Length: 156
Image 1: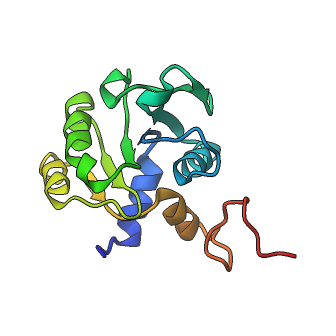
Image 2 (image 1 turned 90 degrees about the vertical axis):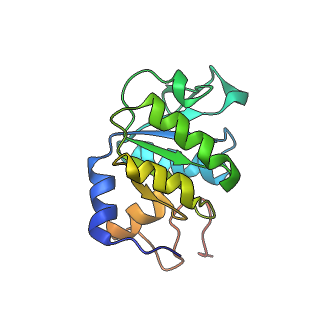
């Protein structure tokens, strides 16, 4: 597992304002849904990307078909897709967003070549991590169970 320094992760989460979530589900029990919801509650503008739900609204935003369909600036692309899909997503993100700051690959998602391509363009890359978990860890929000989703509780 790749190690990232706390200052590196903290800087990404501090400077990011708009996050495009690729593979966002409309199902509230799916990780992509509650990660996006959490980020939106923390003040990030979250743009959902899922071709199956184009035009629907969630968290105040319209679901987009692809990254290239998004108008305006995106600071971070958060990838909730299998590792095999990452190169195409990274290529599209680099083409669509000249000022892109970060490619973030969720837990279980990694692709060394795509990461190297993004880094060569000056884009920060995080692999096999969750921005929700890292935000909570860096801001002292993690509870004893590790995850503070507000959905599952060990309390009786």
